Length: 333
Image (cartoon, rainbow, N blue to C red):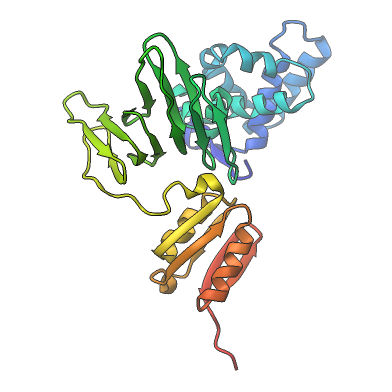
């Protein structure tokens, strides 16, 4: 977290901004004092730190204000946070706890952060990563870039909770005849013996059926469900289901490490490619209408960009390694 984040405090202090480094240091102090065995020297150092700067005191007040949230963190997270001062587990725990502080004490806000979702997930991927998971019933699940899921298998159902991102699922027969469900914030996709893709967008869910059929059921009780058949794709919000249309030929190719495009606008192509690459990736508006076709390897996005330069009248401009813009190719003099 390199940019500053707002730490809501209420009243006039609510507008004050506290640097993430200060928030992290406040979390570290909070952790150090939780054991009840802090020495007099540590307590004095903590008091001096609070008095050094108004931002320090503001960050500590935020921790006190959300103490109830901090007291209710999951035991594995608390254990990792309070463990030895070194190690990846503690560093990760500190990041999550810092997110709670900067989220203003809202558990609902915190649950939407990638750090919290990854911590609580049974499986997750980072940007540019894909992962295959063997399900307890013999089926398989492939997570696309920047995705996270929880598994909940019990006597009544086989459930996958999609916390963020996209998954490709291959179901398996179940001796107990339990339904196979994919739960999301917008609703549920119920597999009817199938291979299908589920992708969480901001405000809606997209489902594509490669084999079999899938029933879509929005969260709203009054909303009508819809069954998609093989070769169809559809989406739904919390309140209703949209119409079905033909599934793109390249749907699911990402599971094999490829991005397949057929006459896709350049701006849409770059938006999809950017999911697999850290940083910013975009193009000059004058180039947005150019069409892209072909199969491109997701494991090497730099190679994909070079291929675009070869195929289209564009050139690459790097503000930094992680900020790339495609611009019209300059005319040769």
